[in-house]
Structures are given as C-alpha cells and as structure tokens.
Image (cartoon, rainbow, N blue to C red):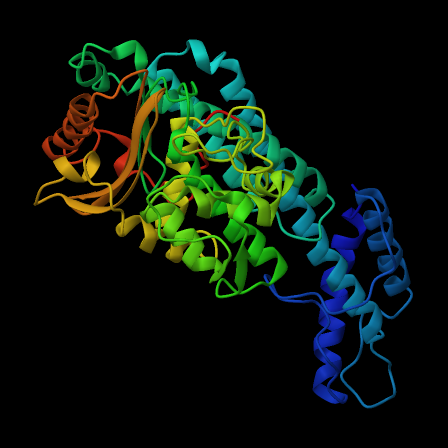
Length: 451
C-alpha cells in the first residue's frame, strides 16, 4: 500500500525520461542494477518504516515534475538526477531488506522444526540426522543475509546460537552411529577404562566415552601446550625462531634433548616436547606462557574441558612452580586439536605436525599402522594412571585422528588392539560405515565435542 500511487506514476515518469533523452543532453541513469552497489548517499535510517517513508517522500518530490515531456528542445527539464538516484538506491535497499527478512524467517522456521524434534540426547539416529539438517539449513539461511541490513545484527546473534545447537546435534548424531566401536573396545576386556574418539579431518567423528576425562592426560597434555604456544606467538607477532633461556628450576628427569641453563629457539623446545616428550621443555614453555596464558589460549580456540594446571615430573624431581591441580583433557577435545593441526587451521600448525611425525615412542599407534595404512604422526602418553595415544593415519584417500586412552593400566596390547580395530573398520567400510555422512558437504562442519 506504501507504493500503489508510485507504481502508477512510474510509467509516465519513465516515458518522459526516455523521450527527453532523445532531444536533451544525456544524464546518468540513477537506479542501481540488481546486485550492484548503491552509490547515492542516503539520510540515516534506523528502521524499515523510516526507509519506506523516505521512499514515499522521494516519490512525492518526483511527482512535482512533469510526468510527460515532449521530445523537443523547448527547455522542458527532466527530473533531477539526485532524486532519481536516491529513489533507485532506496528501492534497491528495500529489496535487500525484504530478502533479509525472508532469509531470517526461513532460518527461524528451520530452527523451530529442529527444536520440535526434542532433546538431541534422546533422539534416534534418523531423527538426529533430520535435526542436524534443519540446523544446517538455519545457519545457511543466516549466512546469506545481505550485509548492512537491519536484520544483520540479529542474524549474527542467532547464528552463534544456531551453530551451538548444530554442534550439539552433530555430536549426538555422530555418537549414535558409533556402535561399531563397542566390540572393538569390549574385546580388550577393559571397556569401562577406555576413552576413544575417532575423527576425519572434516570433523565427522565417532566416540566411546570421549567426553569423559581419562584418569590423567600424562604426556598427551603436551599437544594442547604446543597449540597454546603457537596461539600466543601468533597473537603477539613473535617468531617461533625466537630463543629463550631454559631455567634450571625447570629441571626434572626426562628423555628429551633440551638442557637447562641454555638458550634454544621456541620451535626447538616445542619440537622436543612433542617428539621426545621432553618434560623440561614442557615446563619451560608453561613458564614462558604462564598458567593463565596457556589456558586462555586454549579457551580462545574453543576448548573448555582441557586444563593445564601442573608441570611435568620425572621419576622424583619436581620443578619450581609445579602447580597444584591435576591436568585435564578429553579424547574429544584432544582429537579436535589434532584435526586442527593436520588441517593447518592456525599459524605454526605445520611445526607441530612435523614434531608429531618425528615421534620417538612408536610402540602404540605406529606399531599397528602397517602399509597400506599411512602413519602420519603421533603423541603418546604414559604414567601410573593412564596409557594413551593420539595418532594420525591415512586410510584410502582420507586422513583420520584416533585418540585412545586406558585408565589404570600399562597394557600396550590393549591400546594397539583398539587402534588396529578402528583402522580395520575404516579400511573395510571405506570410512566409518556405508551410507555415512562422508558424502555430505561437511568441510565447514562445526566441532563435534560437546560445548
């Protein structure tokens, strides 16, 4: 109703302009073409209603000029180009606003349909697949909302909420399709002690108690320390080649090659921490970043369960400022960290990847990743409370991360059996299983550990 009279007016105005162009000097066409950028400066408007009022006011101004112009040089003036340009720009902006409203409505409808299915924790696999699809559609619609529209700010807030719900649905959807892990784990006779997560680099995952922390991270905690270090270096603009002094106060028994009272490049200290599982290297990097620096770096990357609160201790010697609370990790988060490394999702990931490939302890994942399986890299961990590995392997044309821990056991054969069983399943089924989500467009799939 806002523009009925204006729509009636448009044909005569257009005819007049076209006729005037025959006899009078050319002037620029005002209205932007579809998908072009509007060029006219408009008064500030804060609501859609104000935009409509501006459009109507410009229409009234335009109506004061002759609606039919004779094609002569008698001096008949065409409508001012600034009014035509502004009117064209306003109409283009209104088209963008209408598109934004439609997309937002589509997103809200998809979200409502997902919510109507119920709590993801209690849904069946087919229902979870449907819920996950609805959340994908909701996020996709919000991503298409044109910038600089009134809906943009609200869409940004909605997108954050919808992506969280999408991640939760994806987590439960993957978990519901993890049944093949049960016989692999139960074959060890230690099922209750196992934590296991397997992910492709596209973040399609399967898990067995992957959200539960193992009894201790042991040296597996060194992977998050490495990620926190690279995060700090990137944020501060510090080169990994920067040398720092290794304090004697961080000495403890270990098999690494980093000595105290000596300077080393940060990247060399990190590599020793990963490949040789150096405790001195780990302790020095914790001091370099500080406890808050380590954990804030991890939180900035979305890891909420992982905590670094204690330095590493050898057989008996405690370093200074050793910490008090136990370290904490889950196989879900550790696996996602490895995915981020092998996807090169942050600066310095290539340095960690190289250190993982140089791993000296090859008794767990490496021991069972025989050709044609490609072993890409690994970090192991072992102490009196836990035995574990996070291993990167290539199966067919896909790369996977397998993270397995075993509480209160030093049974290497059990870990080897779990890793080997997962690899055999991936080989036999050309992925997780026939008809899995491998064919989906999940290149940008959200992380699948529970927020």
